[in-house]
Length: 384
Image (cartoon, rainbow, N blue to C red; front, side, top):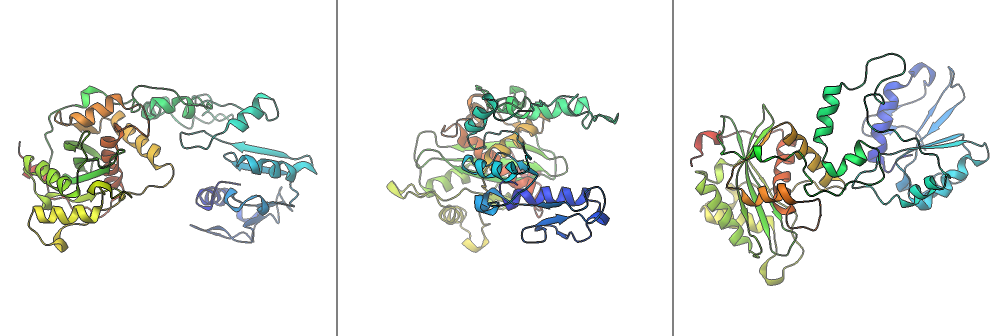
């Protein structure tokens, strides 16, 4: 069992790769859909598992999906909702079976106090395995699954607040003053761009009503390196879409750029409030930007919206922290707001210090995901 169809399908794909097909000749697997059958299943016709049946379910289907079943083993990918746990245990009771649950708690995980309490009461046995070289070494004499150097590099990429979770396999993260722990003032340098960079403007609608942060980035696809050239931060001031457009145009101008030097425009979801004319809307911002440059709206690039599924915030910041650990992000000294956020944001989702970092994150994520960017050699046109 897993949380959702989207999360169980990759597990099915791994099982399909490992499955001895001659032992389960009726099994059918389709990438993107999973195993066939209602419910999805694997039936073993031969081999040591002959007569065995594996079926799949998700928590999103609810407890009725497994109600009435009698099984020997239930394997859970991440803890189920607390209200489903009792139903899971009942499924193995008749045959004195087992329930196995694998998990690594993350900042996006739902509260697991109930599971932790059962562990403390010895109602559930915890097999605690921190991430170490020994834990990555197979018992059959094969070399470790990850070298010491690679393991150290990976650990350096994990934000300090998540180290107790992802490295120590703990129940809670750490309280830190600087969430992006790989950040160093060594990354603050006057930006000199190599050729064949792509220009990106990325935006974030601030935590507080009417605020907006914008970042001007250059990205080199061949090296996955980023340079933060400039920024627009409104501070404590609420701004209209017209004012935002004028500030972005001014930022481009002082860097020797115009709208058509930018390969990728990344916005943010529209804000719901229209109070005091501070609604943030990508369509309105695009119209005002086109007006600033006196071009027809059809000629001005569309402002794309970043993908924001559950968990993307922390996964995005792990990506940023990894790039920092690899020395692939440099920040111009003029970006004082972003630098302050790097040094003082502690992971609080409600803090306005997150706004410049979100603008940066959206640009980085979108650039790494894009497959059709055509660079305009921003490094050749930028002037001081």
